[in-house]
Length: 412
Ligand SMILES: Cc1cc2nc3c(=O)[nH]c(=O)nc-3n(C[C@H](O)[C@H](O)[C@H](O)COP(=O)(O)OP(=O)(O)OC[C@H]3O[C@@H](n4cnc5c(N)ncnc54)[C@H](O)[C@@H]3O)c2cc1C
Image 1 (cartoon, rainbow, N blue to C red):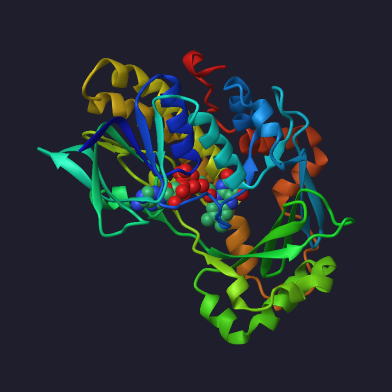
Image 2: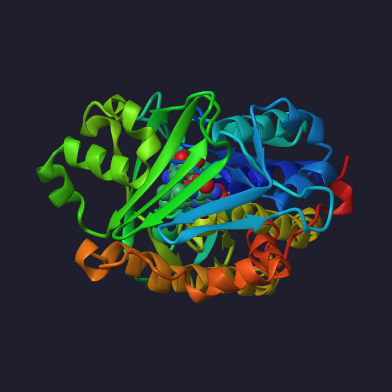
């Protein structure tokens, strides 16, 4: 049986950052990623100021600069009654912006960098199917090579870390069940062509019964169209033209290109979830990122939170992994103790946004508002009246409550 110091399941943002950092600590680390590449459209695109600072600390600023990124220093939300802009120019530190970068490029960059470290291994096409256990302790993983699915492999590890996202196989195998919070929406995810004179960056649009967010991917828009949870079947029955018409009504300047959505095959339904594990660890096992706490797309903070979990885990566990044969439960608990409250705080904000903004907007019918949106919501009016307050949502989204910094041994 093969053996490693740390088996990291999943090569998303959490898994790749954890793999890179542990490898820089000289710890044998194997990342198992079930796909052959990172090229998947459903991944979010935002790399926030806190993660950009981390990349600087890791000496990856130059590598990041080669990626096709768009930098945004403000986000504008258009409501029927007017618009609200959130400025990032007040952020402390070197980055007063958020980068929009295709996540597959970002992950590929982290993989290239990690592969420079002799103790790092990335197994692609390696789908973890179960856990190895000994007297109740997780001692590694069982996986199959998707290019040869009939063969099962085993990898023994001092520590296994689940970074396999919100549908975590490892979490299921460990018998851990997250507490789930209600979510009012699902998301249709599709592309539209982008023209030279279109707006730049992130476009958010709210109107009676409808919400859309569009991410500028340079030559096309990645569009998120929010629908009420469970309304997919009704939408599909109504036909693709209904979706085009609704979107054109919401974002009229896209009307000239909505034929690009030729059919439902081009529209992906993303099931939005918000949940959190009570306990993020077991003997020999830690769970971080979406595997421990699935994030809503609100604020686009999931990637940065997953990265922050990974940095905290690497900093707290590199010493024990280097020094001993086992990592204790108390050491794993320290990772959860550090990352639980920023996660709970952000999820609390997302739940408020679901309940008081998105849920209500999606539930509205045109007849509910005879004079559409005569008034902007109170928080938005406050932000417009006192511009200094705009720094608060900007800070919470772009930096977050507990940004994690690279340990000295990982800096280059
Ligand atoms: C519609 C939508 C839009 C979003 N947009 C944004 C955004 O713009 N910005 C943002 O910050 N966040 C966004 N999020 C949230 C964000 O995508 C997640 O919070 C973030 O990706 C979590 O990172 P992770 O590394 O924990 O897990 P993931 O990114 O889910 O990565 C998990 C990895 O594990 C692999 N894997 C899964 N199972 C196995 C297995 N059995 N064996 C081996 N490998 C496995 C997967 O292939 C994947 O590569 C969005 C979420 C949704 C639902």
